[in-house]
Amino acid sequence: MASDPRYVRRFSRTERTLHWVHASAFFVLLASGLILYLPSLSELVGRRPFVKDVHFDTALAWLVAIALVVALGDRRGLRRTLAELDAFDEDDRLWLRRIDRPQGRFNAGQKVNAALTAAFALLFTVSGFLLWYGERDHRFRFASTILLHDGLMYVSLVLLVGHLYLALIYPATRHALRGMTTGSVRRDWALQHHRKWVDEDG
Figure 1 (cartoon, rainbow, N blue to C red):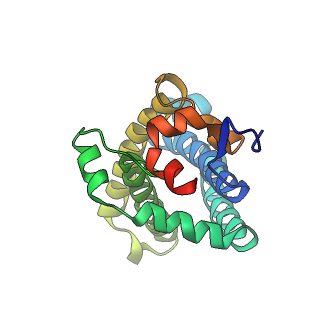
Figure 2: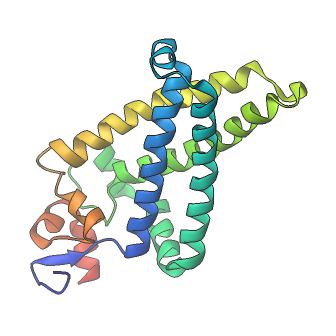
């Protein structure tokens, strides 16, 4: 379908793999984290030590899987994607102010979301490690660490709900999910939402 002139290739296999590895790990981490955090869920599920192991092991697996995708995948393509996400121009600033402006392969909202996702992943990793290590060495137990980890969870949950709404429900944007499953999107949809990218890509 990628060669069909009605469609344009939006995401490579490496980009899609990276997205789904991150998404899968996030859902497991969120579910296990909520069980550990909420007493009602913790009592319902039980087996708290096992859930803690699942939470920690999933975080480790996520880090290893991300590293493998980057190491074995299309690194040049990932560098191009990173450059696109990092480029924030006047059209992006106007778009965020709800002024209709042509967008690239990623609109301004997606660029902000990617920056928050990367920052949250780093903060989750550091605070999660300190929580784990603090149980073994009390010198590394800080009250602010659990507050940071829990706060990140709440904000991430809000961002997730918004992301799922746009990807699965909102009519104007849910076609974007096709790009993350098959790699390609309809050219007419891309022209409407990402005209700058389509024009530059030819």
